[in-house]
Length: 263
Image (cartoon, rainbow, N blue to C red; front, side, top):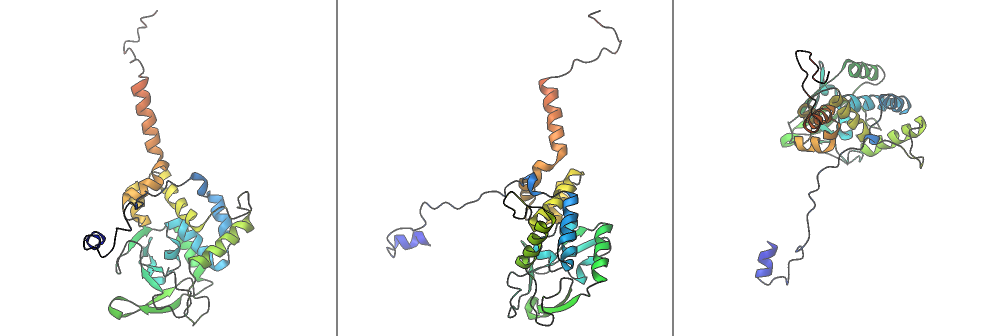
């Protein structure tokens, strides 16, 4: 369209000429950004009690922050969780109508299932023993009203204001500082996204195929997963070392007769 405007002399020149569009691939995650198991437990122990479950849903099922905050009774299934919604960035506003929106890279109605280990089930039970799910209604497809019984209740019951990623992030940073998980400047060493990295790296390090991990993380394509976590797949490193060693320094075949020619 800009080219046509220039040709018709409606504008003297194309203002976008020479502007490069960044298509940089996702950066590989730094191992220092991935907490150890003991550190995950420390964060869970120091975070505000109502968000303890969020820590284990992220580290145990790899959910994004916005997804875990939308966790509801509908999400819980036998042996797995079904992730269908995420909390809108505007959900903290009392006038927000679209409290829940479709998953990233997905349309309304699409979902993904992620295996849930027994400890995740136990954490869900522990959460429910203290806080009952809170019903929240919102506009769904074609204006039809939807109702979810959310685990992370609105901050002000009855007023419809949901906690957002910034709310959870504040409590997360505070937990890191309280637990002593800080950098040289005294700031939180990890972010909520670090728990997602923990899930992916743990699964890959223990032999789960990267294609499955990609699907569970909800990435748009497996290329994204490979770009971020491919270097954490131990089998690839071991296989490469073995291949290059055999190619560059092949060992002499053993004499099946046991005769030593140098003797």
